[in-house]
Image 1 (cartoon, helix red, strand yellow):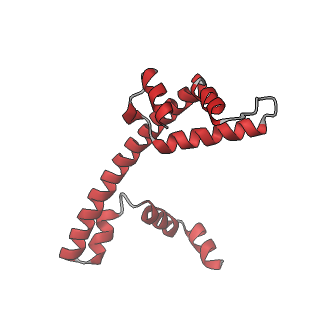
Image 2: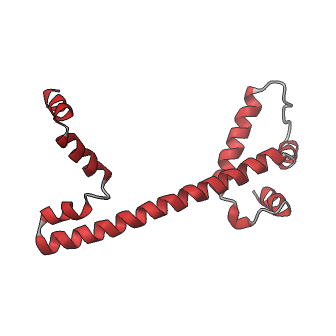
Length: 133
């Protein structure tokens, strides 16, 4: 990992941008490709393999792209979780002050499961079809 990190930093990727699990995933995928493709060279030693791995700009590019995509996903998840946390807090306070009905009234706009249940109940055909099962 130290060799890879040094190489990545030399190529302009900051240490904080490299997530160990992403590197592990990429290396695992790379290894699977090596095993599947019999035209690629066999590695007789760790040094040979590490040298090939560290001289593979496509692998580094893939890791950087994955890091960027994962960061975007994380930002989206955080936005959603902030909304959910806020709605849950409001709903819990409403429940404690005014009763359970107000919990559901407060959370109905952000709870996907509750929204799906409401849409099923409002649709007689779907609702009755589920009851028959």
